[in-house]
Amino acid sequence: MSGPIPRVRVFPGPEAATEGAVEEWNRALRSDDTDAALADAPRPRTRRVLFAGGTTPERLYRRLADPDVMPLTAWRRIEGYFGDERCVPPDHPDSNYGLLRRSLLAPLGGDAPKVHRMHGEDPDPDAAARAYERVIADAFGATDDETPSFDLALLGVGPDGHTASLFPGRSMDPERLCVATARPEDGSARITVTLRLLDAARSILFFVLGASKADAVARCVGPDATPPRDLRPTTLPHDPPPAALVRPAHGRVVWLLDQAAARDLRA
Ligand code: 6PG
Image 1 (tube, rainbow, N blue to C red):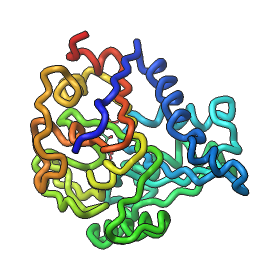
Image 2: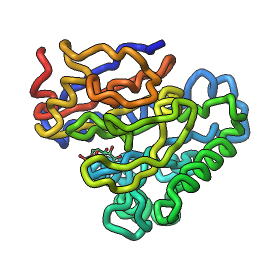
Image 3: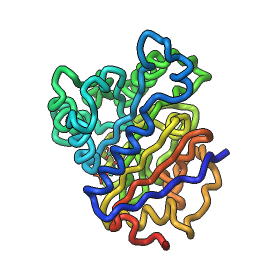
Image 4: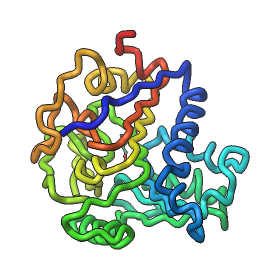
């Protein structure tokens, strides 16, 4: 069952879209009714976030590292995880952990949130993926039958419509939370969360900038986009592309775009 229709927010340019992303970040992570009911709790519930990789989110991470944007104390109740990772060491220029470390963790220093990285350096990506499943399940105290529900999953989209490292044409075990896969263009090994995990998130935030993504955006959320037939396929489709299949049954999905990325969307 697909959840609420995704919301699409278009901004004039990357800077405005980044401020929109900060706004959606705060909306996703602020206290909710559940927490109001726990108002006398000794401290606010931990919020768990899946950070996106690639290059687009760097500008957002740097904004969030600004104490005028996010109070330093707010990071005490946030735990960070990753939507995907390249199978490289954490100090490799392609590492998604390295991106977050440079743009958010290092600037925050001792106020940085605790993050659990995927071990891209592991020579056995499948073992690393299974280990990460256990890290996530343990953090949420989830049994095998339960799907951990992240408060926020921040995602990007590639020109082919992949998200995280969920690439069109790749097989995917619909029951797994995290798997090893490979990027079709060059066969480079990746570790990625799955649609099962993304669809349990309370909030999904696609942060997409630039004309190179316009076609993928239109194929995901445009008026002529092909409706997803199966939200839990064993082979990820090309049309609609994998990013279009992220439709949490009970979560809020927002696509944050600049004008360039929204170019092919009719008004
Ligand atoms: C990765 C990401 C991937 C990324 C898109 C967009 O590891 O590359 O998880 O899904 O979000 O490919 O990448 P850019 O932000 O670099 O355009």
